[in-house]
Image (cartoon, rainbow, N blue to C red):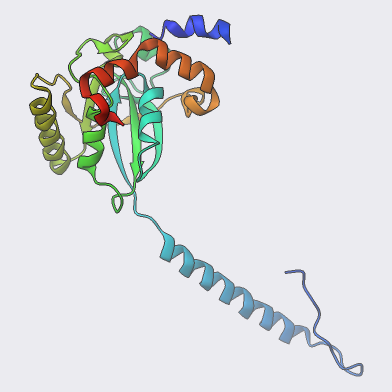
Length: 229
């Protein structure tokens, strides 16, 4: 539970007519045909522009303690389009924050990372994730304790599993210690309540106070050093 937040809550087409000869009247059918042709051309142009600018996206799923913080970290990464906070890993359908935080549902506080594979690949996302969490802690993350705050990587296919495994092995080699972050099969992601989305943007002062007070950045820097920057 974010016990520290209890304390924080207290702180804080003009259409222009064509010139017509004075002895002639406009032909409505011709005008309608011209307008239709123009509209069709505009639609075709718009569709062409949309096709040219369409972005193929992919999704990845990570748990790293407080989903506010994981969301904030990933949304600063070039190639990431959006991050959504939610829950995954458990069997309970439509879990709420209260369910996940106060009972054993098997769900993690997690994030759905929507990204552009043309800009960043999955392996880079996993590498980034490892270096913004404490992968040595199997009891939670920082000041947030309990199963829902543990770290995990949820893979959707064998390709992702191979990339995540290689990243985990590299992290263990760099740190010279066992990485306890598990690599799990992704099943279903449940979006968290609206007030959790973009919390760090909606409540910047409270968020910063929480993150600082929880010691997240201090601990990450102690483990990974300047590499997290």
